[in-house]
Amino acid sequence: MISVQTALLRLGLALLLGALVGFERERGERAAGLRTHALVALGSCLVMIVSAFGFADILGTHNVTLDPSRMAAQVVSGVGFLGAGTILLRKEIIKGLTTAAAVWVVAAIGLACGAGLLIEAILTTIFTIAVLTLLQPLRQRLHRVPEVQQLRIKAVAEQALLNRIYDICTGAGVSIQQVELQTGNGHDKMEIACTTSEANSLAKSLLALKSASGLETLSINLHNPTGETTLFPILTEEEARVRQNL
Image 1 (tube, helix red, strand yellow):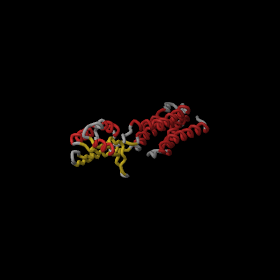
Image 2 (image 1 turned 180 degrees about the vertical axis):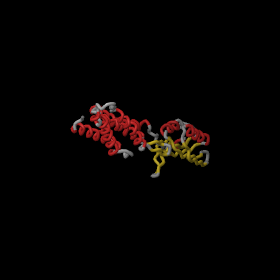
Image 3 (image 1 turned 135 degrees about the vertical axis):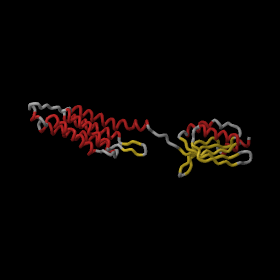
Image 4 (image 1 turned 45 degrees about the horizontal axis):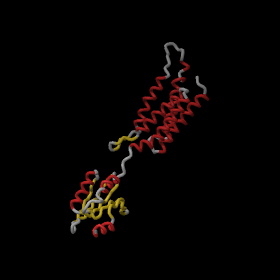
């Protein structure tokens, strides 16, 4: 038989370890939080204690055998239904897999406490919390979506050079939303509204046109609701006037 003090230690430790894992999930406002993980660990620990010691009074009875692993196996398979309840499918995006895995691990932690493997249960809890917290920044970095910027490219140049600027934009893979073209005396004006995640790469490609003949002004502006910020002026108005006087 197991003493009350030992049973209390195992149940209390299982509750504490499950709550620690649940606390991390609670901070992220997951479907299964502190209370769920604590209860799963506590219940698993109790099932393991009952499976190992609850039938000690009938041991030795004729044709009666005891297999403590049977009830533990039912916990491992049965907790899968609880974990499945935390998994959601929204617009072809699956959410809750990590929480479901945490619930499954917490059940194993509870079983370890019930079996008296306290050191193993503590180490597993530490490893679980480390995975949930320390690996999250790495996961976000791996799945980081490039920032898309809305740009306005303004150019005053000869028609052939404007065509070249347009080809550079399309070749850089930008998403062109609007193109405005105004004709003038020898020089035409073009304004392109586009979005791209490679603004610096696009600017470097346009930089090669700085010494091209027939170019008067060319600039790239970051467009936002509060106004426009010039990110990359290639030729200023003063440079254009000096160039016209040469």
